[in-house]
Every structure is written in structure tokens, then in C-alpha cells.
Image 1 (cartoon, one colour):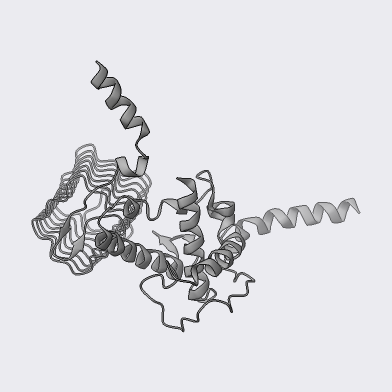
Image 2: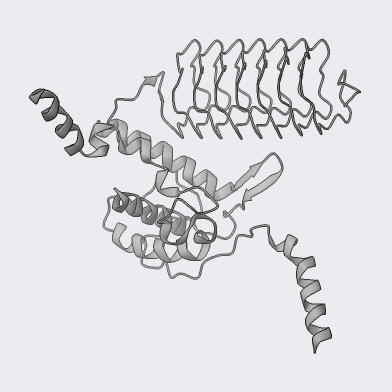
Length: 156
Length: 188
């Protein structure tokens, strides 16, 4: 028994460095209540300030906590997680008063968010965040952003 | 004295967001804010000193003689951009990418370039004096006649780079990768 336990522990230490690399795993969330967006990724969030935003918020919360919280913190409610606090993503846009400029800034921010989610963060050969394009439908990605923005608004 | 007290109370009462509201710059169809999407934009000679452009996309942009002094360029994308004679001194640009960019005669003095990627970039005659570029990649980059005085290049990737004619007084090359490099130091 002790021998088996020791063997398992030593095998565990061998395997741990391999598992340390984050792998994109699709969240188990029913997104059928969200308007379908197709395969081609949009440049801007189609759910913001629409009737679908309420459903996106709940779906986004579940998807976020399954796929993002491990690095970015549970419920997007902390700045002490290993990865950046995503509530700060649109901070500069929130400060803009002019409605047209603010909308433009948010579109730019959406494009940055979508690119980061789709392609991940590979920095000088080190994967800091895996690419989610192959496993995460864009409906879920935009829903996650709606949830993050709601958390950012609640923080203020 | 009363006026001062009233003003102090007013400043405390104002919501933080309202107090920080700002009117951002827009230059040639490019909004100057973090995560700006300025691919291929013409920002030659633009004064962007001290601006927050973290995560901005300037890939393929024309940025000759643009001034990014002290700007926040963390994670920004300058791939394929023309930064000829641009000023990036004291800029903060960790994890920014300059792959295949033209930085001939650019000023990067005291810039913070940790883990930035200059693979295939042309830094001929650039000034990197006292720049901090730990873990940065210069794979296949041209640094001919560049000023590297007091540059901190800990653990940099200089594979197949060309350092001919560089000025290297007190440059730190600790644990740098010199494989295939032309005119790299041989005493580190």
C-alpha cells in the first residue's frame, strides 16, 4: 500500500510540470438562448445594450467561472489573481464622455478582446494564455465579456 | 479659507469616474487610447508622448518620427511598422512586438522592453542606451551601429542577429543566446 502511494506521488511530481501549461477546455454551458452569430468572428460585441444582454450575463458568468476563473479569479471580482484583472479592460473607455468616441473606444476594445480570446497570449515563446478559438464559440466569448463588464460596473 | 474647504469637499464628493473623464486624441482616424486599432495608420510625426496605448495595434503603421516618449506601450503590436527615427525613449513596452519593423535611427534610450519581440526588425543606428530588454527576442534583427551602452540584455535571444559596429560600453549580455549571431561578444 505504502509502496503504491510512494509510486503515485513520484509519478505525480513528474507529471505536474506538463500539466502546469493551461489547456483550453470548452465550458459546459447552454448558449441556445443567445442569438446565433455564425462562424465568422465579429469585430464588436453584438449583445451589449440589447435585449440579449440579460441572458448573456448569466451565460457569461457560468462560462467565465468554468474557463477563465482559474487564472483571472472567481467571478471576475479580484485583482489578486495570477492573470490580469479583466474588469480593467475597458477602463479608459469608461472615462470618455463623448458618446460617439466612447462607442468607438469600446469597439476597439472588443477587437482586442476577441483577438486575445481567439489567439491567446504567446509571448516570446511562452504561452501565457491558450488560444480559445477552436473550443469556444463566439457567442460564449461575447457573453463572457458582457459578464466582465457588468462586474466592472458593479465595482465602481 | 472657506472657499478652499468647499472646493476640497466638492472634490471628495465628485464620483471618481466623473473626476477622471477625458477627451481623447484622435489622429488620422486613429483613437489614442489603450487597445486602439490603428493598423496601417499614418501617424508620422504624431506627438504621442506619455499616452496610454497599452495593447494597441499599430501593425503596418507609418510612424516615422512619431514621439512615444514615456508612453505606455505594454503589449502593443508594431509588427511591420515603420518607426524610422521615432522616439521611444523612456517608453514602457514590455511584451510589445516589433517583428519585422523598421526602427532605423529610433531612440529607445531608457525604454523598458522586457520580453518584447524584435525578431527580424531593423534597428540600424538605433539608440538603446540603458534600455532594459531582459528576455527580449532579437532573432535575425539588424542592430548595425546601434548604441547599446549600458543596455541590460539579460537572457536575450540574439540568434542570427547582426551586431556589427554596435557601441557596447557596459552592456550586459548575461545568459544571452548568441547562436548564429554576427559580431556578438565572445567573452560572455
